[in-house]
Length: 120
Image (tube, rainbow, N blue to C red; front, side, top):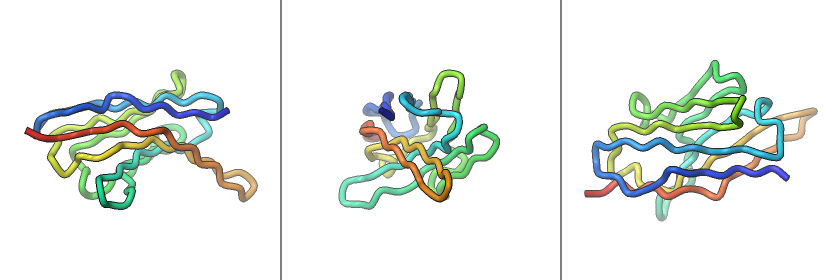
């Protein structure tokens, strides 16, 4: 059974840093594109960053470019989100997602989320 478990979320002051981690199990991690989404109260879930299967390609939302970095370690079945210069508007539940398309069928797995709160 596929499972994603996020960790690392906590309360942080503006300007601070956090590193989120997501552990995958129950599927062939290296075949899946990985991404981080976030959802703030009263807002829709939005893509924050995504990374290709090998880690050679990444993409970021404009709001986090230059501050956040996504990375992965296929040997450990892990994906990370390094978040620097955090601001109150980064407050949200952060979700990890694994995506794979095979023979026209899309497979998406989501984690349960981890809360990030940026406040003084």
